[in-house]
Image (cartoon, rainbow, N blue to C red; front, side):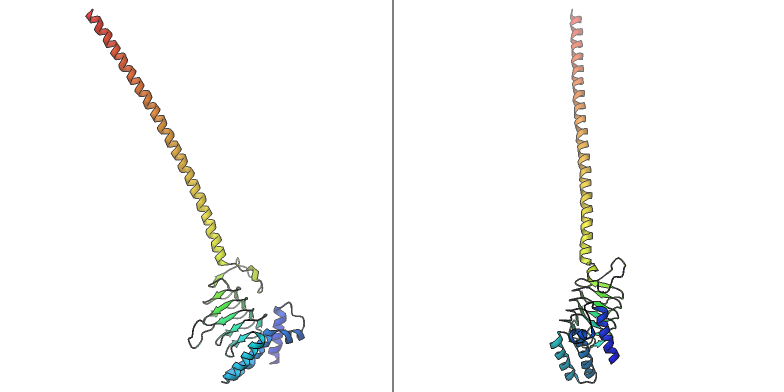
Length: 257
């Protein structure tokens, strides 16, 4: 028991740079208090003393702002940072070395009996305001972005963001577990790619329009040249008729004489 308590305190120092000393951590960190209260409540819950377990969990919720159902199974070195508004459901299972920030919900999606809450793997980070809803597994070493809504299974070593949650990657490079600012938004990336394609289509349409205008101008020039040549030919034909008529008249006059 005392080894677990030391591990819990050390997890605070490992994950929170604001932690200064053991006295401060033990007496002021509400996430730590909620975890310790949950261990007591869970002990009663496993021995079928459910009412006592719920009274302990609700008392802890009143003082810490963190609601952990007595039936939830929590691994070692869980760190709940700030913690206000965190809700962990009855059939939820949390692995070792998990980090949870304020406003996180690990809940269910219906009123079905049995397993209805998520299973969180080891070394998972769940950022502020994220909602993980349903009976599925979040793989080891995964990261859930702030305010993401995760409704389906997450493979290991993944990063999930958005509503609903989508698995994304950061250029194939692993980032620090607390680096929330470097998570890409897949919706923004999709919009940017669509904008790039629209710009290419606009350039292509402009190029085709210029080609058609050039072809139309060449066609009009050919028609004008053809009309001028026709007029010249018509004039030459009329002159030839006049000459023939004049010669015929002259010959006729000579015969009469």
